[in-house]
Length: 194
Image: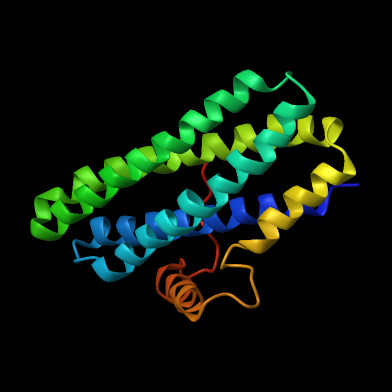
């Protein structure tokens, strides 16, 4: 049986994927139609990416999940080191994404650069999440104790992803409503990335 903490982590990954898909849809639509994108919504998406995955989700992975795994086994040490470095790299990529969005807003000629940087950022995050789900979480399932899982669950539950939390701050509820309402493809399905 899958630990509830694993389901929380996977739900947070699905939330991040939905936000990345929304950004991709907004940008693709703007590029294909030649229309000016909703820069406010794109900034809201970048705000989510900075405030939730970068500052909350990754912190819980580094300080609790990865720390507990390293305390129980050395089997995943190399992959955990890669993932921790990727957490730092994600912050750098997000800064680049913000800068290219500023350039696009200042000049329509910045659209292609933003598209390129967003695509690289999205591929990076999908590969990162896949590494966590296909390697780290299975190692964790085998190596961690019930006490470890309790600590991990408490950490992720205390900073639940706003996409799934019933008591999330109004700021995030409003942001997600807007992202889903304005950016979802008209047929209701998101584009998937491998």
